[in-house]
Length: 401
Image (cartoon, rainbow, N blue to C red; front, side, top):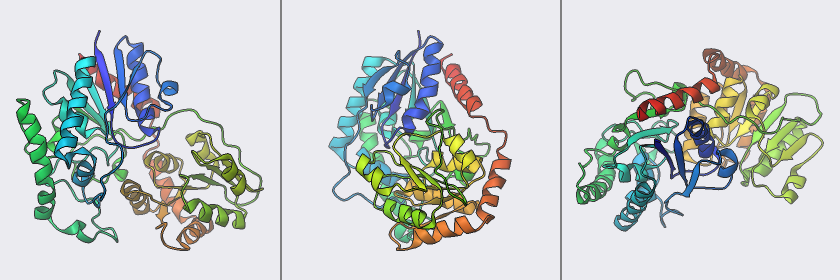
């Protein structure tokens, strides 16, 4: 019976589990033995078939004392494990122990660079799955991510400077490979290109590497998990607002504006305490702490507010809805910039006073951004999330065969 292992190392939240779950559950139903080594186990048991063997994934908890500015994916690797000899060696050894225990025939990597390095030489097929940000294009050096941004600064330092960042990371990885008797990497990007399959779960318009991908790159689209509560909006006139935000200080500014505007708003804030929920609620603002059905929320709202997370951004675009983005991380900012480029929304700096209110006001008063979102929705009207999931499973089965 073929054995499949899903490995998730970086990132937080249920998004990664929800990406893994449809394929893992389908493979179980086909008779395969399936394991999942996950960074976070909370909520995984509810999403995965009981036959999926759950394991805690080796990952670095916390960041270095002085995390680097993310200019390219090399900086992500440096801050995780690739920037320290002992850290990288320990985590590679831990992942190899997982492989020795599971003995997989196929490993599917979801944002798991150290697991990818450790798998070189393992007698298993390898597939990477993820959105544009988590599957960097194989270039030497790795492509710059902040180019064109207002805060790019040293990010535009040029190829030689970027290679200087990558060189010690590559040398550190290659020392471990040579000790194991494996062929060294020629460049960091090879870690992601030297695999049996790459499953790119985004749309070309939202891929930060779209301009440097190989010709013919196949985009599978963004599929969000089914289910969640049906949206129930509070009463009130005017455009409806759907908000999906993390519990950060910007919540107060967003909700204060929406309450003053009396815009009928339904907000999902994961992890927000009961007292805070009650503090923000009003006759026109309902705040819930349970996941909502994204597709239904997209159909029912007029404007969405989020932190720039890809799944929600894509759901609103597919529904033809304008969106405001308040990015917390670089990946969020890249998604927000893509939505702005489509003319389908706005990105605001959470550190700029009044920016959120001004941005929301523009979206509520103008239909031009909704028009930009509808162009995207019409272009991808044939996208079928169920078909995407079935296609991923068929690709994985083909690798096993």
